[in-house]
Length: 497
Image (tube, rainbow, N blue to C red):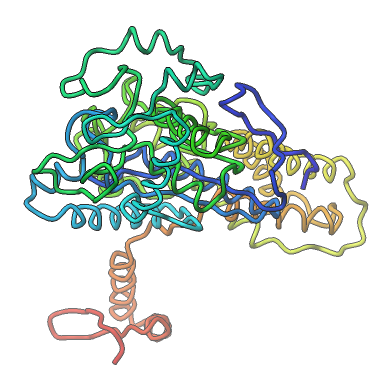
């Protein structure tokens, strides 16, 4: 493995920086998870896979990572600001069920999809509704700091006062406060705010509002941004290493998080801010609010008007990894089909490599080939250490497959390699493909079809009196716990009893 230092692109500084954890070898990482009011889509998959790769690679580098990814189950209003209904409560009303039934259903859908995509679970997965006391305490801290005000039962963050006291607001996203104020339209029901740039920390609940809690300001619910500040502080401390999420969360969500944490804790929350870019369809961001999304279950089944066929979870995973996480990734059937072929090529490389054994023949070593193979492996790791650039790593793995293929086809004996190079090639390929990229072998076969095909061969062997072959096929079936049934009306199979 290369000795290259890990470099990450920090959205906050807008440049690549050497990754130096605050309390090495421990790393704290907080990532914004989904609002669970509908099925996960391809955009959710990209974020989950991106930070799964980061989690995996940091662990591979021997860091002890506490990875926190939240579930938003309250407080996220329809228009991502301080207006509209709670997304989950609205869905619950439409379906005439309790809000937590919606939460439970779609959280399970999300987890099931991520398991299929081989996304590792986070260390901690807290929910907003499970941390109401922590959020109330943070609101009280911000009020005591003088950067929030109560108005008509709600509590708002005073952005202008925060900035005039020497604090920054807008530096993550590059927004200028004056432009935000002048460019914000007047919102119905927001007259209680001093400024259009202010955002809710706690919202007064109307009598018909389903999800509400007692607080010092009356019955209400937390603002959407507050949960992440409260939960990241609880599980990772006031300052931690990495905060991640989709680029669409940079403003207002992450900008508000920074302000809240700075006001409550007197320090900004994260050292490095990492953001994955969007998946687009015809150049437009994919998302629930735009109505142009494809759910993960639709992708796996092929049941969507935009899909020409079903795509396996590993095809979807590879599709997201073939581009750097900070670049836009455009959806198309052709791109997914190409991803499937490339994924299979990686798996075939694994099969070829597994069949190779080191030869101890006393022949001269090919020093140039040894150097080339070790350099390709170094290039794989250089890609990962350069801001988790999976695209470079995958391209280098394909170069390695070309070398593996030479030995597999016996165009060269493995004896031309030193044993150290051979073992490095084998171990690195397995580690990078399986442990780091998280790609596992999917067997794209129909077992029933294979069994029927074998029964046809069995039938032909019987008709041709090839009894050795008949016995051989029966033995194969028996070894798999299956039995062949010879009946008057035909041949079938059953499980061995």
